[in-house]
Image (tube, rainbow, N blue to C red; front, side):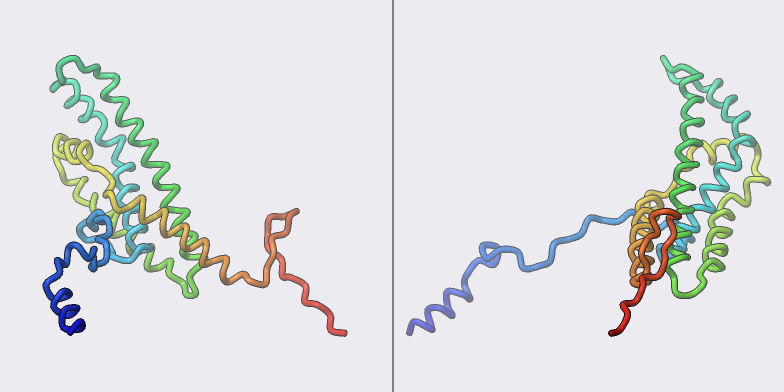
Length: 194
């Protein structure tokens, strides 16, 4: 009889009281940019190309950006402060390019096969997002340039790729030890057999 009560108790028990049975939901990742590769190395290469294209348009876009910022002033805003934002964006963009370059280089070094041609293709694809800039009216280009921001997925993916590639790269150097004088790795000596 006690088995029957146990089965009945389990069947009528509140599942919420038993605790969660589903795995926890991971934090949502930012979406992939339209047209960007889905692998980390390809995405970082694409991001490098898109950001490089954006930064290269600075000198072409800024005269019209200054005209727009001067014409449509926000109440109480200062033109010099507003224009300084674009200089700060350039500096942050250059820092991001360095991160992307480090991540791509680390991935290329850690890869067992050459992947740099894939990276170059993804970089060109990212840069191509700005290909129409030459055909746009100046005001339209300035508006596009002013409103563009680096996709949110780029920097975290680059940081993760760099970290994983560096860890993977060291896995292939099991018989090496850093040379304290030159900073390069030298093979470990094998013990002599008696």
